[in-house]
Image 1 (cartoon, rainbow, N blue to C red):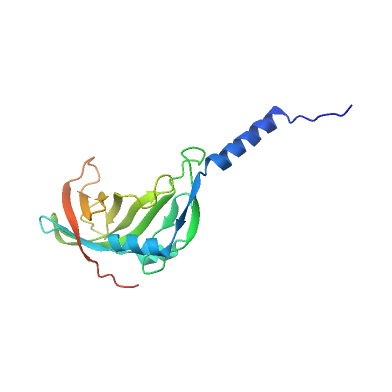
Image 2: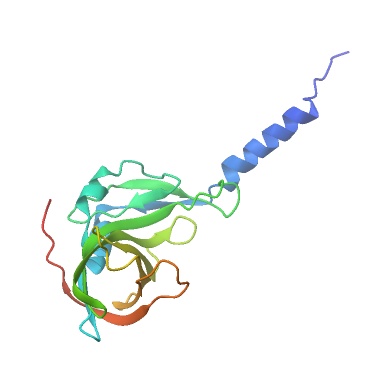
Length: 199
C-alpha cells in the first residue's frame, strides 16, 4: 500500500501566508516613462502667483533626484525627473493588503523660493511634491506639497497645500510648529515656467 505524505499544519499555514503575501501585494503594473516625467515636471516647475504679492517658484532639486537609485522602493516607488532624465521602469500595483504598510510614493524633489505675504524677504524652500502612489494612480491630482523653509533662521516651519490639474494651488504656510492649522492660506495660480538653473 502506497503511503501518502501530508504536510504538517504549520507548513501548510506558512505556505498559505506566503502565497497571500506574494499575490495579494500585486494586482497589475504601471509603466513609468521619461515622457511622463517631463510632462509632470513641466506642471510642477512653475511660478505660482496670488494675492498679497505671494509668489512661489518651484524647480526640480536635481541633486536629490539624481541621487535616487531605488525604483519600486517601499517609500519611493518612483522619483520624477525632468529634462528627459526620467527612469523608465515597470512596477507592480499593490493591493491594499499584504504589503507591510509601504506607501509606495511617487514624488518630485523640489527647491525654490516663496515671497510676499508674511515674508519680508524671499524665503528659500525645499521638499517634495507627492503626485500619487502605486495603490491608486501615480500621477493623480491634486498633488500634495510637503515643503520646508530653509536656512538658520527659517521664517516658517512647514508649507503644505495642494496643486490642482488646472494650475490652481492652495498654499498653507505654518510659521510656528505648535499650531494644528496653517497661519496663512493663499490661493495661487500657475503662470510662466520657472527659470531653473542646472547644478
